[in-house]
Image 1 (cartoon, rainbow, N blue to C red):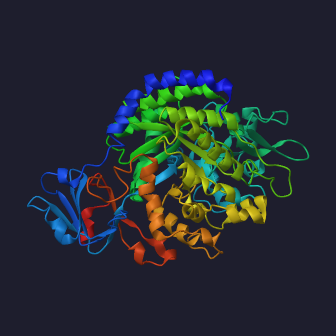
Image 2: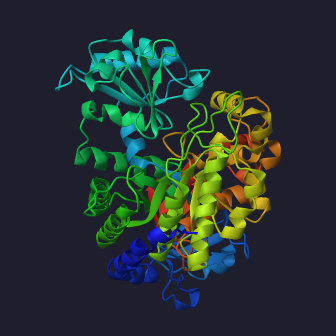
Image 3: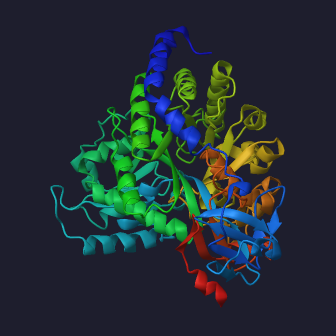
Length: 594
């Protein structure tokens, strides 16, 4: 229950909701939530017919078809080649699929387009597979970038893997110091929860033995001397903000445009941006960047955006969140979701667990107190705003579910479609609650396999809890909804690789044992989790995500039929053409004639 001291706030929130969200609610009702127009409403003939294919529709009533007709970017007919040919006239372009597989284009329910785009534009470590690789990449970046700027030319990058730094996933400054002690070197982990810095960066940031750990953060230290070793966890990353390279408006736009092109090439035309910054007056540089990209005609994806909950503040930030959401709506951008970061990660023991990590008394801690989270979730539900929770540990998952349960006591079943992401460990008692509460589980399928990071995870939590790692199959068995998102650029955004691992629980190209083989899903379930269920959490399931008359013509054509491939070869399939609103945004329809 929400405590009585929150009552005045909730009254104020209702007033804010009344003034700020009525316009948004009416617009949403007429657009994203509107029922798709029926085929009977269509007039005229098709301008495009894709025929002679194997078309998997993700429509339970009619899962397979041979052809689909499109006019003005929308589907007007789906069925046999003969049935759809009735929509043809002299002006219709007819494309022979030559038996190829056509699916609804993919979605991604959790990614970071700006972080990902910029991480690839700077000193990217993503291609590195060893510490020696990182040394070579960083040395090249130092050589190619002159010492300029007030801090002597900061070298900043993203993409190092925690699993390459056993036993705790913490790299040390001595590796970077061997490359330079005169230039600050700052590198964020692939997951974004840790920084790796050299001695010069620590010096410029004023981080010493005497520097206290910030709230919700940790400075990694030598256990004997207490000196910083070069790792900064969670909120401690902000200690070097003052020496980080400046991010310009053009940087933000370029990052989004890069991600659009990359995702379109992978067959993705819908995404959920899992957390952007905003200001109390409702402004947001990232929202402005999205608007600029859209105005150039380069935003060839449907976008839903999370506004970040500021963990250093409390419920007083809610009116500002509503202002930011409403301002985005006036710009034509959908930002009706709030992202809560409840905990950290398991190897560094910042994830929030129900029981202590193996061999310790440490359970981690929540970065948002349960009473605050429940109050915020309830207020957002009243405003029609979706809640999205970052959870890694089983205690964090329970806190998120409890917050939704509290909100349901006040608003019944508001159609806000809450989401919980990651969920490295879910206690068995909580697995049926997703279905009961109407919470969508957002998993990263490429994480659901044995690899070096998973080794660190299992060592930290022990064999019993390791049985409950990424229990995707169990969530679905209990009737819960699952949507997939890569958390790019943490992992590859390629849905075909994700589908392969969802079915096998084995990393592509590896020969290690499956991770919890009983939690694998079927191909039909995996495809739905990358299409219609992503559309659902984005409130776009009446607009996209399946191939039925009235919906947007968002398709992907593959070079191989994944329904006829062995599961461990699905990741070898490639996208030939991606269509968004009936127009190719990757590949060329003419190439299908070959």
